Image (tube, rainbow, N blue to C red; front, side):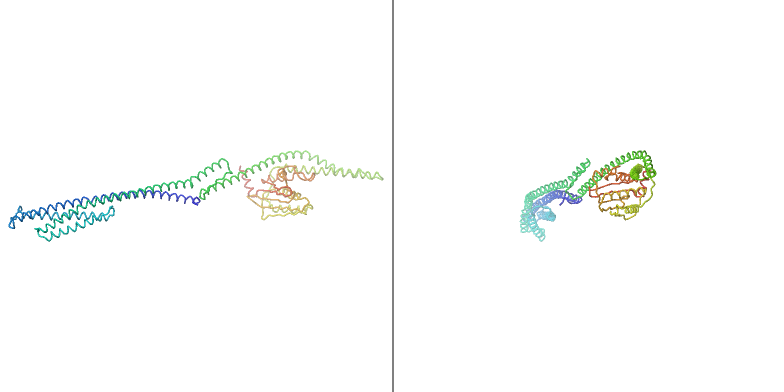
Length: 547
């Protein structure tokens, strides 16, 4: 089904496969890069938590040391009593200095803790951090509660903390120390979980990459297979078939099982080859026919020259014989005068016999003279005076004349012409051609009541006269020699065999053609006469003059 698509659709399918291949590989590569990028960012953000946690633990340690200094100062103050000196180096001054340092370091711890919490919340908001951060949030919440309690104690107390507050704060600081010590543990545990999670994701992405790579390779194979089936193979068949046809094998036909543009091209090539083959066969037939016509014309020309010489040599003696025979016939009455008795009867019989012989000599001499005149007509060449003639009227005149002949009155002649067909011809010569063809067709019917159909029309700037009868028909041998001089199928003494030869010569002199066809003996005959129309004949004459 897909092979019957147009090439445009096939190319779109191939382009779609390529886009799928490129998209699959691109998706796999880009997702792998982004996964790697996310891993790096997650590690970077997780690593950013470590310095804050360690700094927070260090500051709490310093805060505890500061609280311890304050406890030592308070112990010294208790030893000196309430009336101790208030100087800077006195126990009271040391107590005040330790308290101030403790408050400063407590604010530093709060600030570091806030930064740590901000980093933790920022990492959670990005969503790029692998691992579970709930433990860190829980510990951070506990640290915040302890810091709030210490700050609340420091806010409500005077600058000199009572021993109970110092003890409570010391316990809170110990708790903070423990809580901050847990933060790196959470981070280490998250990194361990990250390793496990990344390993799973790595294996998954490895499977995805292999799957996409194999899918892309399969799609690429399908693409090349379809391209070979839809493009390369039809092109190879077309080239191979064209080369075979180019070598002269015109019987070869290109066969493609696709229904696309290449199949149309193959069909067009096959049609062109078939038309070329038909044209070549027709040209071969025309060449053979023209060759036969040339040979026939050469024969006719040779016979014409011979006939002209023979007719010229024997025409005068035949005329003299005919004149002498006619003169002797007129004088028989004076030579043989009737006498009485048996002599009179014998003289009459001798005169009758001499008269019959003289009439026979006269008849045969005139017959020979008629043959020589036809020979002269046959051999006569050169341009004759031509004029525009309506072939329909000319045919109607010939048919009307033949219809008055007694032996043809039982025959039927049908004439079919729908429009005036004007040709530039010698009317008498074309009338002689039509008369010969009509009488030959009627004579071929014998004693039967046959029918002759005369059809007149035009085709390709030529007038076409077709004479179709249902007479005796002709064999292939008769058709081959039909227009040769002195060839006839009639009984001896009933024809000279020059009528169709003269008709052929007249038509050829008018730059026309005459053809004969028959399905065989007893199946009738068809003679077709083609003569250029008046305008076409004039243009042809001008072209001949220009050449």
